[in-house]
Length: 256
Image 1 (cartoon, rainbow, N blue to C red):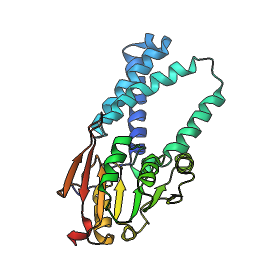
Image 2 (spheres, helix red, strand yellow; image 1 turned 30 degrees about the vertical axis):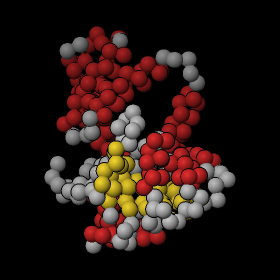
Image 3 (cartoon, rainbow, N blue to C red; image 1 turned 90 degrees about the horizontal axis):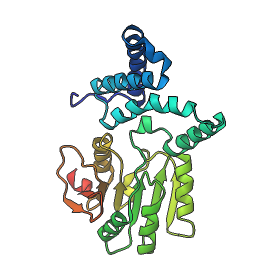
Image 4 (cartoon, rainbow, N blue to C red; image 1 turned 180 degrees about the vertical axis):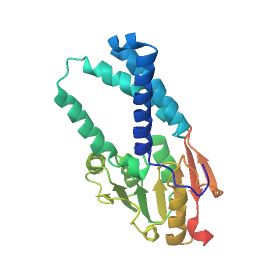
């Protein structure tokens, strides 16, 4: 993909891949293997392979291939189960409330583990400070930090309704934590000495520009797992956990 191009929407790409897979699979089955119409699961597998091929050609992330391969077969398999349709609707609503507009933000739900929370706590300055978690998920990281550093003030921003409620519940009783339901992009980062983000590769360049323009000298940007493209971090912290988490540390305010 060209460096300055805008990535296509994952939702639009997925719809295109599924549509292509359905059309091509229907043609293949009709012309080459008409007997498969009597075996819906087999026909669905053909559709899955066609959709996965289309997804690959559309430069979708590799993990989308597994989704496209499994989607139609799972739909066919689920249709044979003795489950009331209302349960499928309920599951869809729950997923929507958890992941909300992931197709727009390009930021899936990632949760920071306890080992990462301990590593971040060790990065906080010795004096009282203000910390923001951009996309705080279930609030687990902020709960750990707030207990470890009662002298600091913490703000978590989360736009998914159910995840926001989860974070509010997780941080009940902690007077030095605020959880707000909103998009984090309008939040001015100059109010914080430490900014923590566990996002995805897609928004990192934009986040860097925002942090560079808004954060003060000495301010710390901590990115879990995802480096800012073409920018050398001031430090990399390797977390001793099973997923070999890496924290990329930047000083955006010093790069103006």
